[in-house]
Length: 183
Image (cartoon, rainbow, N blue to C red; front, top):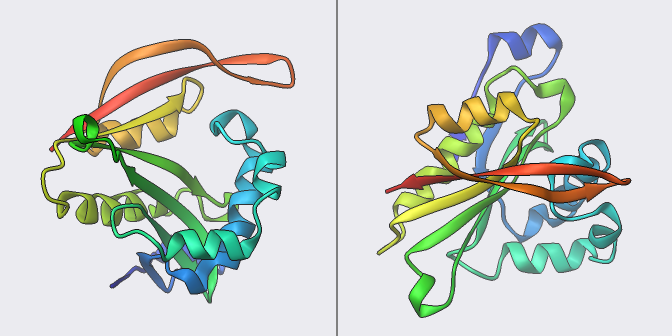
């Protein structure tokens, strides 16, 4: 299911987003490419390293995108190129199946400030809310990411703790704030 999305600001920059939709196996290569970009440009924002990502092939990513109805990724596309993403996975253990985690939220630099982060998160949250017996959604954000934090708070997430030195990138430590959205 796709959502039409247009932005006058995007048109002024020469960008027009075609759709925000759930990724499929056919999007594996584009997702692999944009995820690599995210990890290279914003290493302090993600728990995965670019080296770890490069060990996965686009075919492996494509297989994962098509394999599970309770784990998924949404993306925004501009003329077929993936420019923004947000992912979700649901806990599988019986005692934890009532919760899930948002991960991998990224908007390519040329597309920031156009509302794409909100668009992919809104679409993602719509699908999350449709899952049976899901009671809460968690996410973690590097404490330096103020714009993303503001977006999450505006979507109903609330902080519940800070993990000091959660990530280390090139010898520099970053705290992570943990947030929850109760459904």
